[in-house]
Length: 291
Image 1 (cartoon, one colour):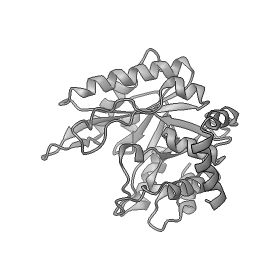
Image 2 (cartoon, rainbow, N blue to C red; image 1 turned 30 degrees about the vertical axis):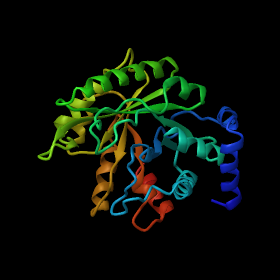
Image 3 (cartoon, rainbow, N blue to C red; image 1 turned 90 degrees about the vertical axis):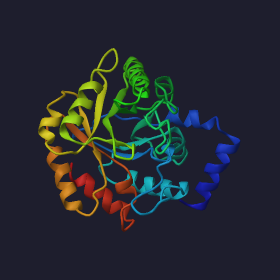
């Protein structure tokens, strides 16, 4: 980011906060799905849950200017349709003129902070449906973790159902990311990525709200994806996880899943924004190529 752009961003936030609403209203929007019928979204809502680590870099996402630089590179690449983020990140990008003609999805419930006693209580602490609509955004994303041992899951289910209904009333996408949760030997909450558990989470998620007309699913790529995604007719976006030590195998699994009839694209975050060689452009181009 050029020094003058940073100075103007900081100055506007301090002296002209009202410009944010005007900038959002003037943003050029586009259809959710373009001519190719696919979506490639960059996720950047991790810091709001205190998730700053990427691989062995424990504080990789702590530098906001560095994150914004990486996001601007990613959003400039051909085939990238937009971003999924919390209000603070989206508003920074708006002031940097980084979201014109892009799909913008606001992250809604970020209250379940990992490592806390209330981790499963994913209450809504960021956008609500009215704010997404008035801010001229294109949809809202919510995390739905279902822990059979934690009473808080019932409140999260109700909150997500109400959010799905409210988004549908505005004709905005409701992106639901469901997980069935189990506890490990130490009592830590762990997402169960077995095919049966993912199917069960999808079955619950797709029935939330007064209508499913605007509901999309965000799902992990797991074993037996043909059977997993046969559980729903709703459009699905694949959650791009960490390729780890075998990126070729991971990308091959993504590409195979992208051929399934309900899959409409990818939502990938830290994997592309913080690749091992820090070459964001090449990492993004590789993921776009899978589409």
